[in-house]
Length: 387
Image (cartoon, rainbow, N blue to C red; front, side, top):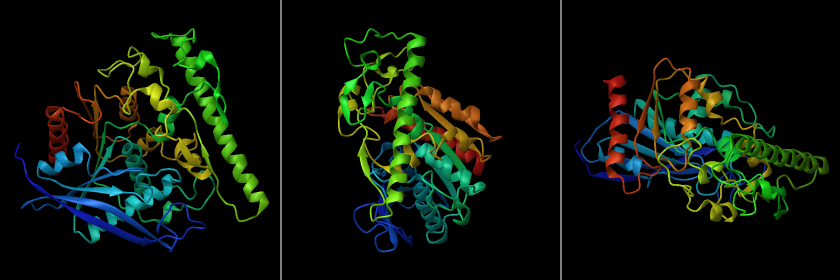
């Protein structure tokens, strides 16, 4: 495969967006406009009418290995930062869909690309599926908190092809499988049930875990999610009843990285390391400040972390008939292997293909051969459908 040098060009997308209160620090929404920052990666001396578009709800992907790998292989790539880039505390998934729509509109109407390949990598997988489902048949008119978010009037432009690679079903689903169910009191994370604390040596349940214990653990995880959702609903209702200036409230969710799969690789076996997660030692991450969902507002919880989130990959995959490629990294320490397979099973596309890359980790760290293999899979699949 030929290798190309490529240029990185900043992309600024601006559009009107009124909000009843400022939800992110800076100029996003506070002046009636949203300003988005992305990056266009263009191989030198390579013209193309096709653009590979990456977006993650909560971070930027322009420095990740896969987008750069595609650019080095001679393809035009755009990495899109949402209005919540690198701070998902107040993230509303429905607004991220609008952000992605504005990038795609800019790519077509301003940059002149005619074909869009929507790349759902990692946490961007469920966003990609939600976007495409709404672009094909928009149904969402409000957020799970009941705020206006009319995607039926957003004129979303569908992508031509969709790729789902090293991606999980959705932020809400993955949190429901990672959150620590041992916490009894949300205000006091030291109040815990020993039998549900994976990291407590006094827990009588130790790896390898029984199927009954895993089932009990999962049920307790879902129950904690529902308790937090009930708290968010009630808090918003209380604020509305006060009819004052306070419209939103932040809160902390303690201990959000506890999955039996981290400690027992016999559960959904693949080539991942034992006692490890994509952020490092799971016990450390569980109580640290960078765990997923750690800081949230009431509305953000309902939109991206609760069981009512619209960004559910399985539900969205059932609504999409666009050609779909799925790639599972078989040593992935972030995305459970069952997630890719569930999306494949749920997909309504008559043209869906799944590939597995033996030994590949989530970020292809120190695995240049696996990265090249992943890039080749995507490029060949796209070429078969575009000529």
